Amino acid sequence: MPHHAVIREQKETTKVRICFDASSKSKGQVSLNDLLYSGPNLNPELLRILLKFRIGKIAMCADIQRAFLEIGIKENDRKCLQFLWGQDNGTCLHLEGQPIRALKMKRVPFGVNCSPFILAATIRTHLKKYPHFEVTHKLNDLYVDDFYVV
Image (cartoon, rainbow, N blue to C red; front, top):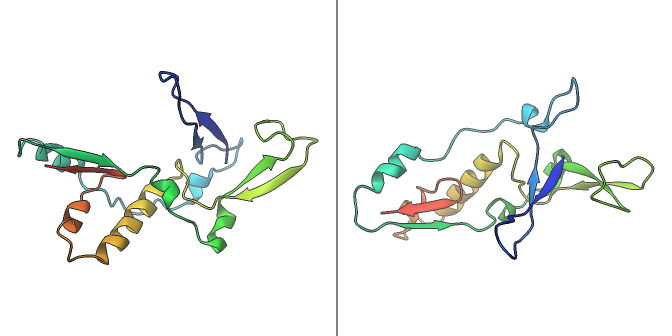
C-alpha cells in the first residue's frame, strides 16, 4: 500500500503519522479497497449525536488515542496487508535495483475501507463482556474513536 508521512506544520513539535492509501491503483487495476468488503456501518447516526448536545448543560467528549493501531491483525490475515519496503532507503519511491522486502501490517491501518468496521466491532465485542458497568451502555455511542456524552 502506498503510504506517506503526515506532519502538522502548525505546531513546533509534532508526531509523524502514517497515512495509507488503500484506494490507490495502477492503470487498469483495482485497489485493495475495491476488493475488501467494508462491513456494515456500526457507527451511531451522527444527527442523533449532535442533537444530544441540545439536551444537557454539560457535554463531554473523548478520543481513543491511535485507535486503529491498538487492534492487532491475526497472523494468517496479514498476507492481505503487505507492502514493499526498500531495505536501503525505505522512503524511496523507485525501488528498482535495491533490495526489497515484503512486510506485513500487524495492526489495523487507517485508510482501509473496512478499518472503521473492525474498530467498531472490536469495541462492541469488548463492551459485551462488561454489561454490568454503568458506563458500558454509554460507550455504545462511540463514533469511530470519538466518545460524546451529555
